[in-house]
Length: 239
Image (cartoon, rainbow, N blue to C red; front, side, top):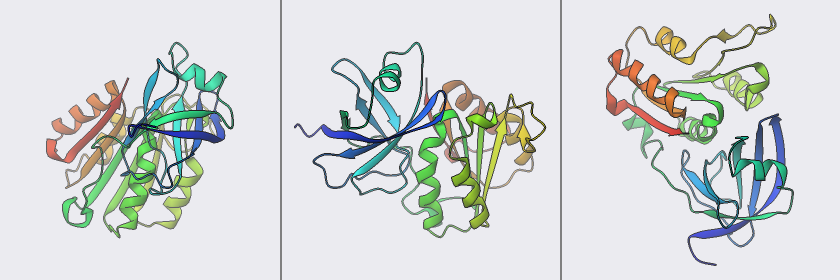
Protein backbone atom coordinates (compact mmCIF):
# COMPACT_ATOMS: atom_id res chain seq x y z
CA UNK A 1 0.00 0.00 0.00
CA UNK A 2 1.42 3.43 -0.87
CA UNK A 3 2.49 5.68 1.96
CA UNK A 4 -0.24 8.21 1.34
CA UNK A 5 -3.08 5.96 2.46
CA UNK A 6 -3.59 3.50 5.30
CA UNK A 7 -6.34 0.86 5.46
CA UNK A 8 -8.83 0.99 8.31
CA UNK A 9 -11.93 -1.00 9.19
CA UNK A 10 -15.03 0.17 11.02
CA UNK A 11 -15.20 -1.27 14.54
CA UNK A 12 -18.05 0.83 15.88
CA UNK A 13 -20.84 3.23 14.91
CA UNK A 14 -22.79 5.38 17.39
CA UNK A 15 -25.84 7.36 16.29
CA UNK A 16 -25.65 10.65 18.18
CA UNK A 17 -28.84 11.94 16.59
CA UNK A 18 -30.76 11.43 13.35
CA UNK A 19 -28.17 13.32 11.28
CA UNK A 20 -24.94 12.72 13.19
CA UNK A 21 -22.88 9.57 13.77
CA UNK A 22 -19.58 8.73 15.39
CA UNK A 23 -17.51 6.28 13.37
CA UNK A 24 -14.74 4.32 15.06
CA UNK A 25 -11.97 2.90 12.89
CA UNK A 26 -9.04 0.58 13.57
CA UNK A 27 -5.94 0.46 11.37
CA UNK A 28 -5.40 -2.97 9.85
CA UNK A 29 -1.62 -2.62 9.39
CA UNK A 30 -0.47 0.54 11.15
CA UNK A 31 0.34 -0.05 14.82
CA UNK A 32 -0.05 3.57 15.88
CA UNK A 33 -1.54 6.62 14.23
CA UNK A 34 0.12 9.88 15.22
CA UNK A 35 -1.61 13.23 14.96
CA UNK A 36 -1.83 16.57 16.71
CA UNK A 37 -5.14 17.50 18.28
CA UNK A 38 -7.04 19.71 15.86
CA UNK A 39 -5.79 18.07 12.66
CA UNK A 40 -7.94 16.32 10.06
CA UNK A 41 -7.70 13.33 7.76
CA UNK A 42 -8.99 12.55 4.28
CA UNK A 43 -11.26 9.52 4.02
CA UNK A 44 -11.48 7.73 0.70
CA UNK A 45 -15.13 6.68 0.64
CA UNK A 46 -14.77 5.06 -2.76
CA UNK A 47 -12.54 5.42 -5.83
CA UNK A 48 -14.20 8.71 -6.79
CA UNK A 49 -15.11 10.32 -3.45
CA UNK A 50 -12.66 11.66 -0.88
CA UNK A 51 -13.81 13.79 2.05
CA UNK A 52 -11.97 15.59 4.87
CA UNK A 53 -12.99 15.10 8.51
CA UNK A 54 -11.55 16.54 11.70
CA UNK A 55 -10.11 13.95 14.04
CA UNK A 56 -12.43 13.54 17.02
CA UNK A 57 -10.11 11.19 18.93
CA UNK A 58 -8.54 12.41 22.16
CA UNK A 59 -5.55 10.04 22.31
CA UNK A 60 -2.87 10.10 19.58
CA UNK A 61 -0.47 7.25 18.94
CA UNK A 62 -2.89 4.30 19.11
CA UNK A 63 -4.43 2.06 16.44
CA UNK A 64 -7.90 3.58 16.64
CA UNK A 65 -9.47 6.73 15.24
CA UNK A 66 -12.80 8.47 15.76
CA UNK A 67 -14.58 10.66 13.22
CA UNK A 68 -17.73 12.69 13.77
CA UNK A 69 -19.83 12.77 10.60
CA UNK A 70 -22.92 14.89 9.88
CA UNK A 71 -25.22 13.70 7.11
CA UNK A 72 -25.44 15.97 4.09
CA UNK A 73 -28.53 14.57 2.40
CA UNK A 74 -27.75 16.04 -1.01
CA UNK A 75 -24.05 15.18 -0.78
CA UNK A 76 -22.16 12.43 -2.54
CA UNK A 77 -20.16 11.12 0.41
CA UNK A 78 -22.05 11.07 3.70
CA UNK A 79 -25.18 9.28 2.35
CA UNK A 80 -22.92 6.35 1.49
CA UNK A 81 -21.54 6.24 5.03
CA UNK A 82 -25.00 6.54 6.60
CA UNK A 83 -26.84 4.11 4.33
CA UNK A 84 -24.23 1.48 3.52
CA UNK A 85 -21.28 1.55 5.93
CA UNK A 86 -21.29 -1.23 8.56
CA UNK A 87 -19.01 -2.88 11.08
CA UNK A 88 -16.08 -4.55 9.33
CA UNK A 89 -16.16 -2.40 6.19
CA UNK A 90 -12.74 -1.18 5.09
CA UNK A 91 -11.69 2.27 3.89
CA UNK A 92 -8.51 4.19 3.19
CA UNK A 93 -7.38 7.12 5.35
CA UNK A 94 -4.67 9.70 4.77
CA UNK A 95 -2.07 10.82 7.26
CA UNK A 96 -3.01 13.63 9.67
CA UNK A 97 -3.13 17.03 7.97
CA UNK A 98 -3.59 20.69 8.85
CA UNK A 99 -2.21 23.40 11.14
CA UNK A 100 -5.28 24.10 13.30
CA UNK A 101 -3.44 23.07 16.46
CA UNK A 102 -2.37 24.45 19.82
CA UNK A 103 1.14 25.89 20.17
CA UNK A 104 3.74 23.32 21.18
CA UNK A 105 4.38 25.26 24.39
CA UNK A 106 0.90 26.34 25.51
CA UNK A 107 2.00 27.44 28.97
CA UNK A 108 4.24 30.12 27.51
CA UNK A 109 2.65 30.81 24.13
CA UNK A 110 -1.04 31.16 25.02
CA UNK A 111 -2.79 34.05 26.70
CA UNK A 112 -4.19 33.65 30.21
CA UNK A 113 -7.55 32.55 28.76
CA UNK A 114 -8.52 30.30 25.83
CA UNK A 115 -11.96 30.19 24.25
CA UNK A 116 -13.05 27.42 21.88
CA UNK A 117 -16.08 28.27 19.73
CA UNK A 118 -17.88 25.59 17.70
CA UNK A 119 -21.11 24.86 15.91
CA UNK A 120 -22.25 21.43 14.70
CA UNK A 121 -19.50 18.93 13.95
CA UNK A 122 -16.99 21.75 14.42
CA UNK A 123 -16.80 20.53 18.00
CA UNK A 124 -14.88 17.41 16.90
CA UNK A 125 -11.31 18.80 16.93
CA UNK A 126 -11.88 20.53 20.26
CA UNK A 127 -12.23 17.21 22.12
CA UNK A 128 -8.55 16.49 21.63
CA UNK A 129 -7.41 20.11 21.85
CA UNK A 130 -9.09 20.69 25.21
CA UNK A 131 -7.76 17.38 26.59
CA UNK A 132 -4.26 18.31 25.41
CA UNK A 133 -4.47 21.80 26.88
CA UNK A 134 -5.67 20.64 30.30
CA UNK A 135 -3.10 17.83 30.36
CA UNK A 136 -0.37 20.45 29.85
CA UNK A 137 -1.29 21.89 33.29
CA UNK A 138 -2.54 25.10 31.71
CA UNK A 139 -4.21 26.90 34.60
CA UNK A 140 -5.91 29.75 32.74
CA UNK A 141 -9.63 29.87 32.06
CA UNK A 142 -10.77 27.52 29.28
CA UNK A 143 -14.22 28.18 27.80
CA UNK A 144 -16.03 25.98 25.28
CA UNK A 145 -18.94 27.70 23.52
CA UNK A 146 -20.97 25.20 21.51
CA UNK A 147 -23.84 26.42 19.38
CA UNK A 148 -26.48 24.08 17.97
CA UNK A 149 -30.26 23.90 17.56
CA UNK A 150 -31.88 21.74 20.23
CA UNK A 151 -30.95 19.49 23.15
CA UNK A 152 -30.95 16.48 20.81
CA UNK A 153 -28.21 18.16 18.78
CA UNK A 154 -25.78 18.55 21.68
CA UNK A 155 -22.71 16.41 20.92
CA UNK A 156 -20.46 14.90 23.59
CA UNK A 157 -22.63 16.60 26.21
CA UNK A 158 -21.99 14.04 28.97
CA UNK A 159 -18.23 14.18 28.41
CA UNK A 160 -18.03 17.96 28.52
CA UNK A 161 -20.41 18.18 31.49
CA UNK A 162 -18.17 15.74 33.37
CA UNK A 163 -15.07 17.72 32.43
CA UNK A 164 -16.73 20.94 33.58
CA UNK A 165 -17.44 19.29 36.93
CA UNK A 166 -13.93 17.85 37.33
CA UNK A 167 -11.83 20.78 36.07
CA UNK A 168 -12.32 24.08 37.93
CA UNK A 169 -10.82 26.15 35.09
CA UNK A 170 -12.91 24.54 32.31
CA UNK A 171 -16.38 25.88 31.50
CA UNK A 172 -18.77 24.21 29.04
CA UNK A 173 -21.30 26.69 27.63
CA UNK A 174 -23.85 25.15 25.23
CA UNK A 175 -26.07 27.59 23.32
CA UNK A 176 -29.31 26.45 21.67
CA UNK A 177 -30.86 28.52 18.90
CA UNK A 178 -34.19 26.70 18.45
CA UNK A 179 -34.94 25.04 21.78
CA UNK A 180 -38.41 25.95 23.09
CA UNK A 181 -38.79 23.53 26.00
CA UNK A 182 -38.87 25.00 29.51
CA UNK A 183 -36.66 22.14 30.72
CA UNK A 184 -33.71 23.85 29.01
CA UNK A 185 -32.20 26.28 31.50
CA UNK A 186 -29.02 27.08 29.55
CA UNK A 187 -28.22 29.84 27.10
CA UNK A 188 -30.30 30.40 23.97
CA UNK A 189 -29.97 32.37 20.76
CA UNK A 190 -26.95 32.79 18.55
CA UNK A 191 -23.36 32.08 19.46
CA UNK A 192 -22.25 35.59 18.47
CA UNK A 193 -24.44 37.26 21.09
CA UNK A 194 -22.98 35.04 23.81
CA UNK A 195 -19.42 35.79 22.65
CA UNK A 196 -20.13 39.50 22.85
CA UNK A 197 -21.68 39.13 26.30
CA UNK A 198 -18.84 37.10 27.81
CA UNK A 199 -16.05 39.16 26.26
CA UNK A 200 -17.57 42.64 26.35
CA UNK A 201 -14.92 43.46 28.94
CA UNK A 202 -11.77 43.07 26.84
CA UNK A 203 -9.11 40.78 28.32
CA UNK A 204 -6.22 38.71 26.92
CA UNK A 205 -7.58 35.57 25.24
CA UNK A 206 -6.77 33.14 22.44
CA UNK A 207 -9.77 32.08 20.35
CA UNK A 208 -10.14 28.86 18.36
CA UNK A 209 -13.19 28.78 16.08
CA UNK A 210 -14.47 25.80 14.06
CA UNK A 211 -17.69 25.26 12.11
CA UNK A 212 -19.36 26.28 8.90
CA UNK A 213 -17.69 29.09 6.99
CA UNK A 214 -20.39 31.68 7.60
CA UNK A 215 -20.30 31.24 11.38
CA UNK A 216 -16.50 31.24 11.50
CA UNK A 217 -16.20 34.41 9.43
CA UNK A 218 -18.88 36.20 11.44
CA UNK A 219 -17.37 35.20 14.78
CA UNK A 220 -13.92 36.36 13.70
CA UNK A 221 -15.32 39.66 12.41
CA UNK A 222 -17.10 40.29 15.73
CA UNK A 223 -13.92 39.59 17.70
CA UNK A 224 -11.88 41.91 15.50
CA UNK A 225 -14.49 44.63 15.98
CA UNK A 226 -14.25 44.07 19.73
CA UNK A 227 -10.54 44.82 19.55
CA UNK A 228 -8.99 41.36 19.62
CA UNK A 229 -5.80 40.83 17.64
CA UNK A 230 -5.95 38.73 14.49
CA UNK A 231 -2.89 36.78 15.72
CA UNK A 232 -4.94 35.44 18.61
CA UNK A 233 -7.90 34.26 16.50
CA UNK A 234 -7.40 30.80 14.97
CA UNK A 235 -9.99 29.36 12.60
CA UNK A 236 -10.96 26.18 10.75
CA UNK A 237 -14.05 26.06 8.57
CA UNK A 238 -15.94 23.73 6.26
CA UNK A 239 -18.80 24.01 3.81
